[in-house]
Length: 305
Image (tube, rainbow, N blue to C red; front, top):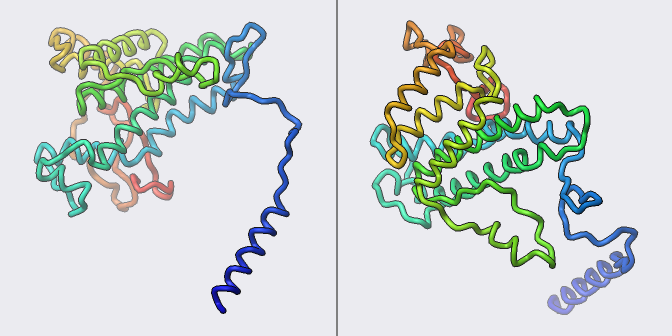
């Protein structure tokens, strides 16, 4: 009896759902296979129309530093410090213990998460690098375009430097994947599943991004929260210390250039790790040692605080 009643109720609900939904076979719109932006009269793709739209993308790049907590904070520390025996895993979780006992494999969920999110970060800044010069807004100055593009290149190099040191072979993606349409699917599909490059090729792209970014990147200043020339030079020093492109003369030269940008060691090393007297915040920000900072303040809604 109960089964019959339940069957009738389900049937009535399904009938009501069908009656309440109507299919408009002729919607007031045109079919489009593209997902964002438009094509101009010559067929060129215009993804961002105004400076304001590109500004939102540019500001979003810096928000990635704050919002990508797992792979750029938690996972980065775990992979580097636990693997080098400077720290313990801190949990018995099945996805974390392999870092502790050196039994990692390709199916580890942390590794999968980091791989995907690093590539998402690269895809995000590629949209800036590839489109910023195409924005038709005349109020968008050439100087500003060049600076934002330079900062995006530094960001991309920073991500690739982490990736190549973690994995070795990685896909070196410098182009934004186009929208897949019926006409270009065979040509565009491989860009969504790129092959991996060698560490040598990855480091060459990192060096290319950083060296080309330096002329247009902002100067090193009291604002330590932007990707400046000094950030690029410090990353070049790190890159040239790695075996595939090792050149200690360049390491020294780029380190010297960072020092010449006005950076120096603090007199009291403990200042870098202390809390203030009230215990509510760190003791110091933007010290003379600081080249780049992502700052988190109490109450910002982020556990990195």
